[in-house]
Image (cartoon, rainbow, N blue to C red; front, side, top):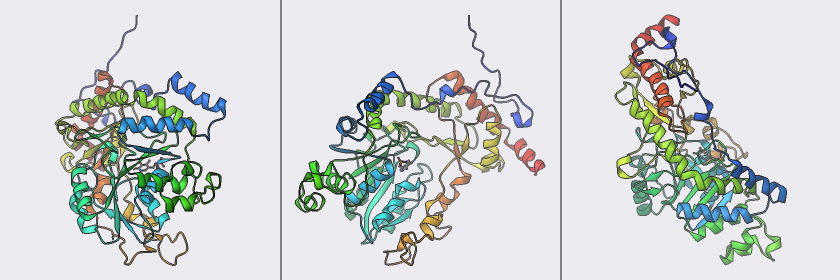
Length: 447
Ligand SMILES: *Cc1c(COP(=O)(O)O)cnc(C)c1O
């Protein structure tokens, strides 16, 4: 007979750092492990290896068709990673030398940095303090005659405000590229992220929510974008797909065997990833539903706790957080006697699990690669090498983005909805929040 023991810890007890007992009695990796790999994934991958078909694209084409059926996009082109898929998306919509793209500063670098390979300039936008996605209200003042595209990043699974972004883009004749690397399966008012803009670039690397190795996907309904992407970095497949006569003359001038990629880049995906992708996709909707109920449960348990609010979209209007990649909370030190997020994280992690961390990315507009690096010896910073002005944003120009390091907290990334276990982690957060005043004194005494 087995007996399950649940901790007796209450939210009113002292945190471990003040002498209490741990809220998390059993930190079990199986609650967090990802991706879920079964014998079906293993067989699919090993079959590719045994057949020696890693560099072919027959299985990739099947994966692309199935992904397209899931997302509702006509043209789907797998890439070696999300960075390359987004580069191909930028080239696909026509980004080139001297052009500008508008991208939020609060994102991973691969939402926009590769535009500099095309001689284009990323222009950084402020984020909305609730969604942490690009704030549509700040977009118009950044648009110039050189602006070619807006990159809408669905940050940490939260859908960007696509209605407002698309309205601006259509009116100003600018393309919208969705970066869906955090938001595979997220819904925006009932529509899947990645199906609303002109094109989507989607990371599928091992750490993401749809995780199949090193892989990425470009998805679009626009034939021109697809053909340009395939001409850029898929030298064998381009002969089959590029129909536009001018483009075809360039990439396959004599016959299919002489095809060359425009960029001198190879973007093909390893078919082990495509094979795993086909298996993962079958189970993905049901698996992320469980993640959503687990993380919604965690946040509902914390309802009313001072200093902590969910980073969560409006579920009532048919939006979801998808696979809830890198789940974050909004942290308000002013409600917690000034306790810093770093001290809060340390106190929660002392409760018996190391799964809480300081959230948010480093603001891109402040990074040396975006400010100073002259990568290609142009005699000026690469970011503005082909610009008509110096548009580097000074420190202080994007205050919400720049302040997020003190106002974001990364919460445990639950993959399974286990109510009793999740309650332990919620209790850890509650205990620490409810002892904030004592913790501030404790931190002061220690320094
Ligand atoms: C991971 C990521 C990418 C890049 O994808 P890779 O597959 O790692 O190349 C792009 N954008 C965002 C927002 C990401 O998090």
